[in-house]
Amino acid sequence: MLTITLPLQVALGCVMTPPATPPALVTAVTARCMQDLRQPLWTLHDPAMAVLTAQGSLALPSLRSCVMTESVDEARARCVRALGMQDGEDVKQTIFTVLGQPDLTDSTVSALASVVAAKGLRDALPLLHRFVRGDDFASHSVAMAMFQLDPHDYVKLPSAQQVAYAVGIADSPFLKTHRMYSAAFASTAPRLAEILVDHLRLGRVSLAGKEVLMIRWLHLVGQLASSVHAKAVLEIALFDGSEAARASVLGLLAEWNSPLGIPLAVEIFRDALSQPTFARSAVIDQAGRYLRRLSAAQQPDARAALSALWKESGASSPLGIAAGTGALAAAGVPVQIPDRVRKGVRCQLVWSYRSMTPTPAAIEVAELVDSPCAHDMTILLDTPDRQLTDGLIAFLRFPPPDPDLFTAARTALAWQCGRRLKLSMCRHAAWYLRGVPLPSHPD
Image (tube, rainbow, N blue to C red; front, side, top):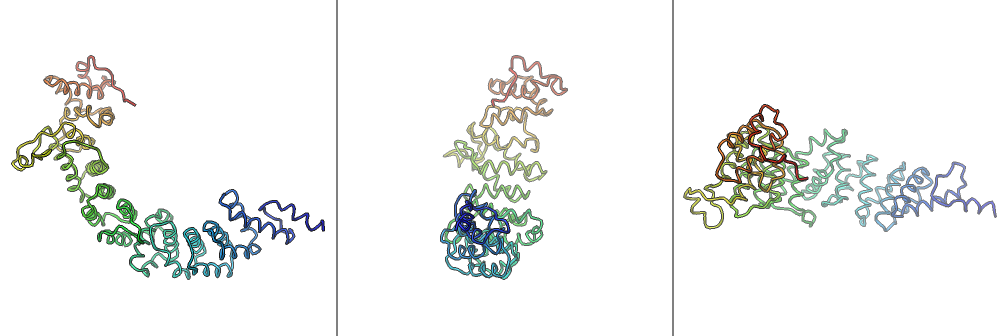
């Protein structure tokens, strides 16, 4: 009796067993591994997965039982993954049987999809179709498995499920970088992008009864679409009208270097100029980045838009600022723009001042050292620029009556030349910097 119980007593955990291990001890180890596989701690279920995989056919009965009967979703998913590491017709049939069950939940579905893709079970594609249903990780996993097995199988899905499939693929950056699938992705992505765009054009922002934020929809479109979709994407922003949608669309158009969003960006800035106060927002930040990026890429319409907005954001403008000035604007009478509004808008434009035609006057740039973007301006002005330096020196030769403007010009010149008086562009700056402390970034 002692010779039988002693080996069982040394089976203290889920450990690798040598080939000559008695069957009773192997059974005990397998049972312990199955217990660990059901535990939430990875330090338990990960080693158990390795041991059960090494046991091969000896572990199959226990794994099949778990896959068919386990009620805890995460535990069942781990059993599915462990079973998927085994080979044989019995394993394949068990996977097909489980795929047909009506009570599958998210983690198990995701695990089944991964196993089906890894084993290349194309016959399982019809069984996977019903799980492509929404914007969740299980649906995404199934979509990716379908793509790996057959990139064109999605056309067999109903239209609503094709949208869910496109969402899943858009949320799988693995497909865009993995060499095995890059060609298939490149050929399929445009059509999937059109599926998402068509869905959005109808004002549908829900999937499987769950509303999806417009900003996320547009992010997903951006993963699949290209500049050929620029017009359709812009229509979505105009249709939706929300700040989040307009900001996301301008971000996409900037990536595609598309000029189609220039009128929208100009409208956003003009709306900001028409307000009595200025508040930074995601949409105006994105509009500024969009115009600056296109302008830096030598896009003539973007450069013209920046120059026009700079001119309109001068001290007075016929835009009709604040309540009661619309009639004056319609009559072409210049209306005073609140100083903070003017400077706030110009903060967004000034980073492309070299791309504007004509280039803004140096003093107009210098004036922004006392503005909502004062810190950013110190970074810009800390890069010497002959046109800026010459313009500031020329301005300071005839001191203006406005002491604030005089101070701003000297401060800007100090940023340009304070530590660079030996530069040829700064040789005439020393006289105007007397008494001006050397500037430093506040942080």
